[in-house]
Length: 289
Image 1 (cartoon, rainbow, N blue to C red):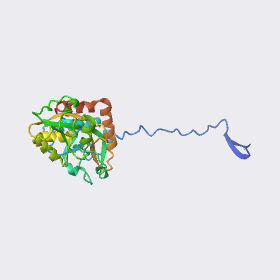
Image 2 (image 1 turned 90 degrees about the vertical axis):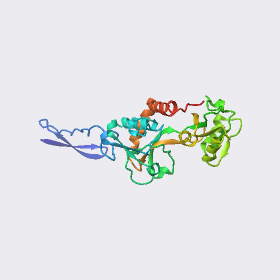
Image 3 (image 1 turned 45 degrees about the vertical axis):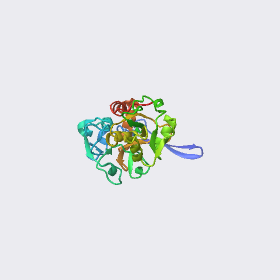
Image 4 (image 1 turned 60 degrees about the vertical axis):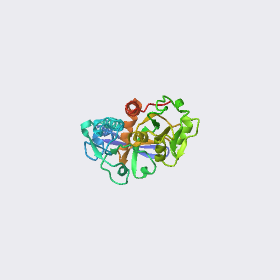
């Protein structure tokens, strides 16, 4: 049986219903959890071009020191090693990674992509970011000094040894401010309208060295100036640093997970070790201080 009692509380008439002793009150429904939260970055949760496969794009040929032996899949070279480390951080074995040939210019063109991300020395710029998405930077571009191999400055072991060098730079580049602020040579650098003009001046021994970004320095020594060498590299001291980022189709949800993988590589020191191995020691571009 039930019995009801009229109660007056704070001017409000309340009907209170109680159960007779012989009756039990209805049990309150137990709230059960909906299960463990789903990890959006777990391999099985990732939205990929090919389910179960991580597809990475880059250009061909894949040049050193960014890749080794024109084979991105071997995990060697700076970008080859970075791609392999990111893939591992996302949970993929080397056998679960596929490589797609993507010309540099088409990688950041608007529209659908045939890769999950692209790695190809692509600088993060506001203009490109209108058409594609980027990860956090995985490499901060440094400046490099290039000299002829028979120059007295070719063996400079530090920036102080370049004080008397006649240095050439291209107008409007970060190299110009880097020379003035970091190297601080006795004579102001020679400024050229085009990079090719600075390269020609080096060939003709009108200047002792040129300062360009490190990726350009690799190209200059490999393809433009026979007998030249990278004396060393150094960080610019001011301005917004140029960074390379992994590139994604606009709106790709994979970006956050890749950023997490990159953050882990940075905090563990692995990313710095990869740079030291492939862009400093092996590449013959020592740090100048």
